Amino acid sequence: MEPIILASSSPRRQELLNMLGIPYQVVMPDIDETIPEGMNAEEAAEHFATKKIHAALKLMPQGQTIPWILSADTLITLDGKNLW
Image (cartoon, rainbow, N blue to C red; front, side, top):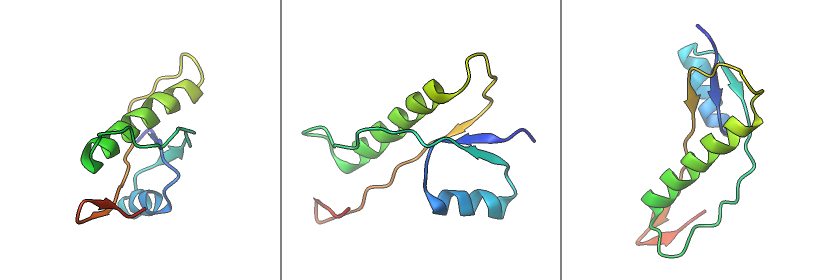
């Protein structure tokens, strides 16, 4: 199996991929994680995951075949208040 690109620095995501025996290559995109005004936590998590994919693609060598990119983001809220 060709390694997937993990567009995240999350140790937990790496641990999960290791447990599943999925080969991966970490590409840590540097993105601004300021939540845009009016965006709820669910929208923000999707927004940041998408930004990480685009940033990771820019870091990859031009012409390289990239079969899979895994990107995710987690935001924790309680009673409508962000807790990160």
